[in-house]
Length: 456
Image 1 (tube, one colour):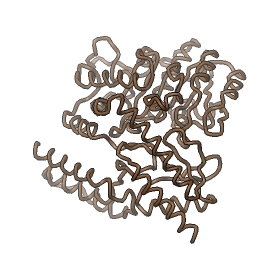
Image 2: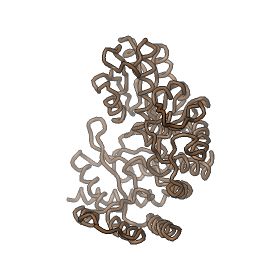
Image 3: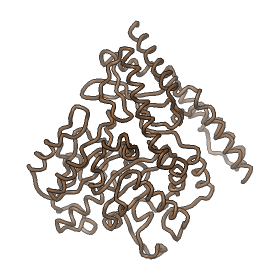
Image 4: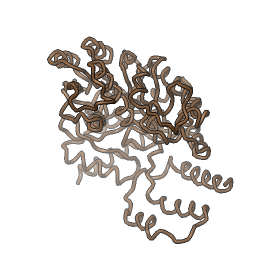
């Protein structure tokens, strides 16, 4: 086992050492990949070391350098050194983070990391923290708690009686909400038609005056979905004003802060999420701006008892956790890996100052990227308030050709998006290892592709 794990670590390290210079994304022969991984299931066993070598050879042509400094396609960072090593330890330890009896160490790590996260994100110290798979899981947990609580307040026990015959729940959300909100509503039995949509402002933040109008025009159990970090522009809703409005109408305020919630950790951007502590539940991703390995997200709730009531379960064969809610009581999964070890390690490696610097640097680099593209003739479609940049070259067709050309070029990787009915390149700067030189090199590559598209 020692030799095998050492070899796995060495292979992983060799790959990570090449990220700074390897092409980020290049055309891949997917049929060749299927062939490499495919074929009949072997009849006889294969030695573990040989399996490891086969896996490395088969995967190598299809690995995407998303962990490197020039990947800007989605708001995902590359795992920090300590977080990567901690995750490897977690796999080796093979702990099931169900409760403190099954893994005392996992419970202690998540308790400590959860406390640190709440401090960094400006959330109430008394809030509960569930370590889920990502933003989708966190939004689903938060909205499940909200659903159960607002119906309980209306005299309906959804845990016992389900939604059939229940009072109609109002779900109010911005026109610029993330698609995971809609999927959560589908999974929770609401459906997407339940949404009462609120207008958004020029940069994508919710229109507070329109929110007030929508809230006045209805009644009944109320959930309002707010946002910290628009997926296209980075814009954050006015959380203080919105939460106060929602609570004045007796509603539950949920904040989708998959990446934007990290603005609270940086003094230069904290004002963007002023009032975040007033909400009732929050969703956040760790494998975005905290730069921890996949899959790592956080579901926080201002009412731990409601959080546990919505997520926990019991069975005669399960060993309890001493009467206090913990770990699996705040997540939809029971058999789950101990992802808290990597989160603890990342926070320990960075410290409060390191997290603030990481957020601040990514924001500065996003502005640098936008400035370089604008100087080269691009139209910047958003106010760059966080780490998101929208860039457009002429019409929709040319912009899409630029996206395709950049992806073929391999210097960096970014995707396209539609914002206010127009096509843009979408650039997200989230990686701890990205430098000014990386941004300058990538901006030059984008402009070179755009010039060739123009000439063509």
